[in-house]
Image (cartoon, rainbow, N blue to C red):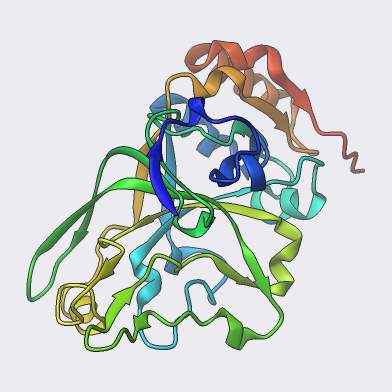
Length: 277
């Protein structure tokens, strides 16, 4: 079931709303101080194309080559306890961990697509241009962020491959809305929650339309990232933890950034509880 309902009219644990019944109220992101500066100064979150992330198995399919270039993702964790593995993997223990409200994007309380399937959960927002060029120029823009979606982890790599062709009798079509929701089991330690943008309309009722492997080959996606605007109120409740090996000088830089761009965060900066020699 899917319908448009303002989230602030729903009670916690409403079975129609995956934000309330599957995701915590806040999420966490490990990143560099340089990226923090961009987030604070632009009030945006960057979504990177999945063929540019660490795991080369991202968005694998059985029937759609290069499908990973259709998906842009912002990756977070629901793990509230500090993780040395995540500190080391994404910041070399010198960056920051940002805690943000799960609903952080512009229009976060207005007319979301409420559904019991969080793969298709949609947050309505502004238009984000994603460019495809080639034999035929196609400029696509999406007005929805999909998520928050808890990643599914699989032991068998074959289970990572999503079937995009839906063989409805007489009307087979492509559906890529599930792309970027599965990862190999060794990544389970991340406890990842993901937001996605699709460089497409999500699905095509006609396999000969712009959404097809041949169309993607002829008109590849040129855009490498998309910056999505946060809601003006989202930073008011944000918190920052400094990495285990962050220097006093870097601590000062973070404090200055917060004072300049997001004053409410200034009183919510703390040091990591993980101590290294």
